[in-house]
Length: 405
Ligand SMILES: Cc1cc2nc3c(=O)[nH]c(=O)nc-3n(C[C@H](O)[C@H](O)[C@H](O)COP(=O)(O)OP(=O)(O)OC[C@H]3O[C@@H](n4cnc5c(N)ncnc54)[C@H](O)[C@@H]3O)c2cc1C
Image 1 (cartoon, rainbow, N blue to C red):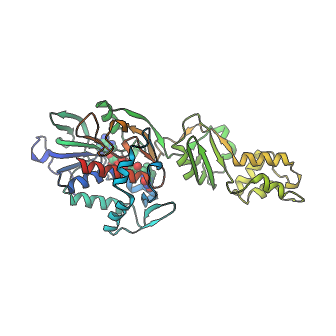
Image 2 (cartoon, rainbow, N blue to C red; image 1 turned 135 degrees about the horizontal axis):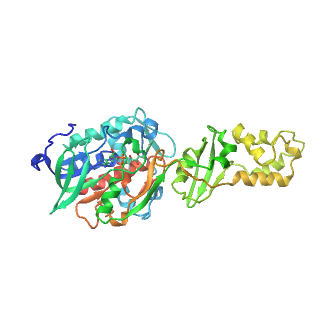
Image 3 (cartoon, rainbow, N blue to C red; image 1 turned 120 degrees about the vertical axis):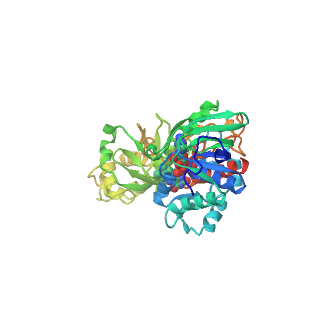
């Protein structure tokens, strides 16, 4: 990989390409490698100092690079069938073959989630090697100040000179984690060319609560348990984590993508029991405190806070009225919570919304109204669940564009 090779202001051979890919993240590197290996002259540009930081920090540093169970149902979009075609033409098995070709050891964690044994850097190195095989040129760090059509070609004014190409692929990702280079470039380019943008918002993000309402739970920070959570069309059974400001953990990250401000979450804290039946059946002569009973299923600190919240703190089970136990069970199986907000793009793993897919061709990712302009990856209105789906979308949409440009 040679950085900023062929820099110059003249649009000579060095700056004339078949394809410019803007954004050298997951989708951009995949598209560039595929197009380059088809014999296209490709240049890949990125404004960040460091390459593919999001891949590097993904999956806790081990990159959950795909999910074996990937299907259209694992994605949120205003146009839910759009992703079907690209996902079927580049599958998790296709990416796994690439990973194995590069000798990268991997393991399945749970629910089809595949991670590197070693580090996410292996995936970055693999994508760079694939770009090198395709003879891809690089400009990094490099900023684009202007993109316009020049007859049949596209012209990009950049800090590395003016580039020209037949096709431009926008792969600049979503808005989450601005401090490592996220920008709204893709959305701005879409608007410039009259392509609608579905209002973006943070997703796969911890949820926060009003400080006063959350005060009784703030001291539970660090406690976690498996729950069932639902909101709107979303329903997940995963771990939940209490934080100082609210809730996190996979269950909450998943449901946050479905949640809209003002909506209520419903959480079943003890999904494997019928608590009313269990508590009433165990009641006779039972001097154990309610909190002790609850701590069979809830972390001790939560069991105590929960008993107190329902006026049963320090009470032996035998002394509780059936009605009070039924009420406790109902609240435990269906805790209703209205988040005040989320931790925002600073903590969100992805962005929901983005470039509207009705304006794009589902086979190629090209804008229907702008020949030669493509959008791929997280910049688009296709948002995966937690668990490797977002990378699979980056690979699949990158492959689709890479084959078409
Ligand atoms: C902490 C964290 C952990 C994650 N873990 C996982 C995981 O394990 N599995 C999973 O499937 N998903 C995970 N994700 C989501 C996943 O990283 C993204 O969905 C995926 O990287 C999107 O790929 P992309 O190529 O569209 O965008 P990105 O990978 O974000 O790449 C976009 C690139 O464009 C560049 N860029 C942005 N603006 C400009 C501009 N104006 N000019 C030039 N270049 C620009 C950026 O510098 C970046 O290199 C995680 C996300 C985060 C934040």
